[in-house]
Image 1: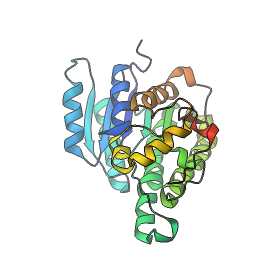
Image 2: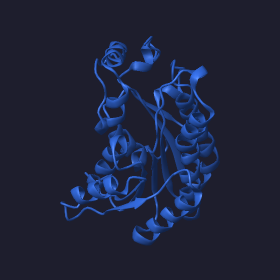
Image 3: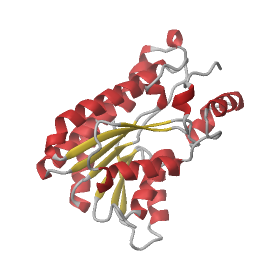
Length: 256
């Protein structure tokens, strides 16, 4: 079944990790997909992989989510190539594990610029087109850290909590225009970023808090994003979907 057939999607941060899994899943679901990422080489490598299927419609576009002009140019390129966009997934993000008292002003600003301001700029640029057509699906990739305070994640948690609030405001304002806006809060997911940042002790502590007993896969987050982007979720907006193996039920806070 190709639930997204005929739709045009933009996935920011789509060259790797959760974003890349979402790109692959959306292409399999029949969508035309634009990978918007700073790492154009990695994005183009994913395009080549996906174009092994002759039916795949996918392009790579270099873009920094913190630069408004680049965001606008990217959306214009997508319109020219495919039309739309009908779907936006804001997956671009960076992490930081540092105590509140040790976090520098520059680190704070950088994390919020990518994780929150980037989603704002991309959401605004895409939503302007969606409102004109009376249809759109926006999925913001937040984090369980945005739901509960986790030690060592001051800037990251603040950015992801802000993204949940932004999602709710966008949903309230855009719903009457046929645009739904939802957030996904993944728990610990096996990605290149978590493999780099999570030590063995951290992984063991997280797994001990996850009722399902393991880290999630990027494919599982991608499936959730595809559902929220589909017609099956047409009456769901302003929601935050937890994809965390039940970790929210046992408290995200770990003492590492």
